Length: 303
Image (cartoon, rainbow, N blue to C red; front, side, top):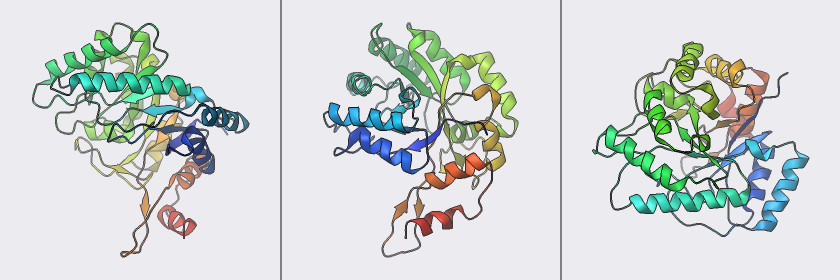
């Protein structure tokens, strides 16, 4: 069976940092993973521990995880589309994140393009371009992967044309790519029941060479809802078979595919807990066999 590159979002804590991320990914049966270098909602960051990074690389090597397939996600609080009082902060914070990612040795950082917040798409896109041209230099070692968005509120990047405009405006085009999110493009209006056609559109507008990774999520929403609510694989409106076709698509071979599906809650109302579904979803995807009992399997495993 084809060995796909599949993993999930994992934690990155101050005690074990990248080593802890690798351990978590291995526990899920993954051969890649994605992490934030700190909390996505704030600017608090711990100094990178080179010893922990070295141990992490040794563990990756033992478990056939290629660091080039590991993804870092930029914090949500970075908004490059709105040139308000926080614009320079967002640019500088992204520079710092890139430095952290380079220190860790990763190659891809996923970034939400941003929300224009009533400035309008044209000005918002120009702001993103200006910011990226400020951040990216010839010495930059990472690729910034602009994520396809659902189009909630004033989000930019919910259609391929907007992403193309941003890429066209970036001077160092070899340092920018795209991360395609299955939930987001469904919610934005792209029909994943005809994924071949979606890829044709992507290739004609942006070019498949710019696609560097995928977020694999089912959606709680109908197509064109613009809501961005992820669902566990096979339990949403996209369905298991459609998602499997995306993951195993011939044109997407060799691209890292990352699960960001919701944690499962237990049945205890007084002592609610959340459990990661990734070990079970990855197994399901590798077998290409839908597990109706996924939710119960996750709950029972963490009892």
